[in-house]
Length: 109
Image (cartoon, rainbow, N blue to C red; front, side):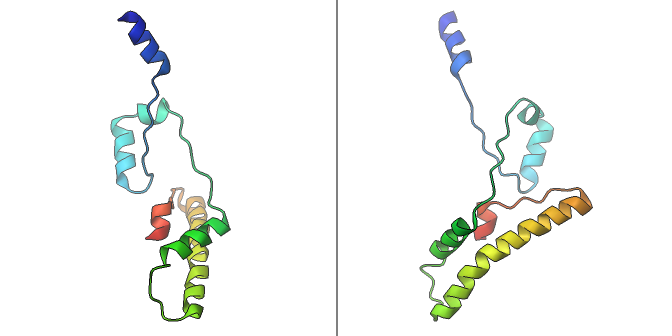
């Protein structure tokens, strides 16, 4: 039994995934401070422009937009809007000293 517990303690890894958007993460971090102080937080890197474009194209692929010019304009606007929001989030952080997170979910919303 001791060998089993020692092996478990040595090899057990737990992965928790929380979205930093909204009050849930802040609330959990306050209730359980070890979530932040005793863990490794893996911040995701920004999306490349071509990935944003491809995701946007796939997201609106089934929508009837009438004209290819309209579809092309929307496809180009989606990554532009996401990148613009990210730039404004940096500005907001600099001025207000508060983070605003954008995620793949918020991109598609």
